[in-house]
Image (cartoon, rainbow, N blue to C red; front, side, top):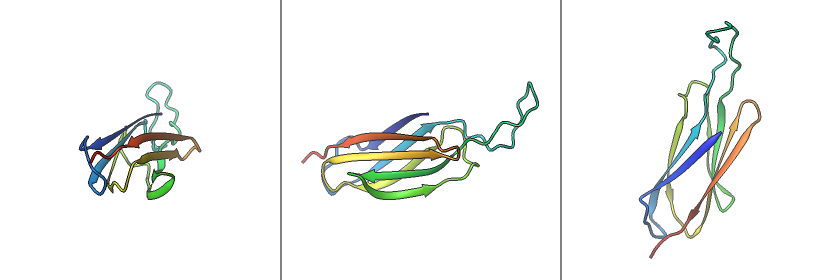
Length: 108
């Protein structure tokens, strides 16, 4: 699963509130769709949990259901306390996990 973290605005100071977008390139299969060629049911494979952490401290945790669209986008607002590392961990119903991180570097 490929991921992307985007922070807006690009320049911010400690104490500012930023918007954090996390996109996961994932098929989000519900387990209710059939393969067009074989007629077999495509097994469920969807993101069911997303955690946002700053310096390994949990900011928020999202519990997700299979009804989200392909390549879901998750957005939070985050008050930047200081320089550090923002980490996002996404887990699937199949036990797979992906971790992405972005350096937080306030200016000013």
